[in-house]
Length: 95
Image (cartoon, rainbow, N blue to C red):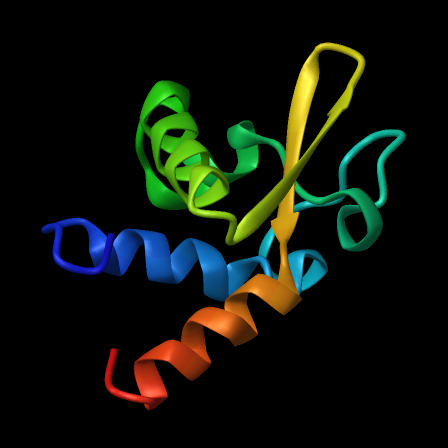
């Protein structure tokens, strides 16, 4: 994940999701701090099509760095702080 040319984009997404209320507009019916953010606002912030944002988010979720939750027809993404801390410890140990 970190060796790809777009790793900076994925790191930006992880950083933005630390405090979604500060980086994304409010969402109807869903609290971004509790449920996360769907691909639309992420795509808008990145300036890319929604499918590109969904690819980035899906990869991060597949690695376990993001948790997903389906609400109605949308998937919402939020950080998995426990898993992120585990990965950070692996890198600190020189993995």
